[in-house]
Amino acid sequence: MTRQSYATEIRIIRLMCTGRADLAFVFRALSKGADGVIIGGCWPGECHYVTEGNYDALGNMLLGKKLMDHVGISATRLRLEWISAAEGARFAEVMSDFARQLRELGPLGEGEGIGPEDLRMKLGALSQLVPYVKLVEREKLRVPEKVEKAYYDFYESERADRVFGELFADKLAVSQALMLLAEKPRTTRELSERLGLTASEIGKHMNDSSRQGLVRFDMA
Image: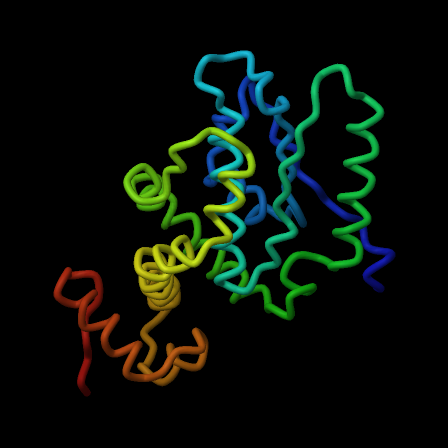
């Protein structure tokens, strides 16, 4: 099966307001077999609600892309487009373009060179991280100015990269390790090889997790 011939599966998140487009929905759709997720929202400045939820959707999408990229899943599988209810032709064009883009990427996981077991582990780890992401996003990643350019500038900045590394990198590594350990006991070396981390990094994460009662060491 070539990348051009497989049946692309796209999930469209359709809600009363895109501000409700939780990252949990995105990761669940990908876990259920979707090759990509596209969120369609009102144009900035044309939100039907005082909350201006389309900016919240933009922040979620940009953060979701960073999370996906960090675990090796192509960030282009998540897309946000501004499309009003009166733009039927634009909707068709956007969907056709997204389907073409996904065909070029190939099936989720296969296109990234990630096996089914590792893909399941990575998506599971992302899903488990969502509650923590929501808490941190309010405190550390909130863009004060609701202007589209401000969101892109912030998430592409060194500051955002630094905050992401400080707050999410270790959490994601631990979450993936715990997903693997939930399947069966594994050695530090096995975890290191599967996650692409050094033995000392795995040791640190497991020591921290042990103190929290999340894992148990067997020295036999």
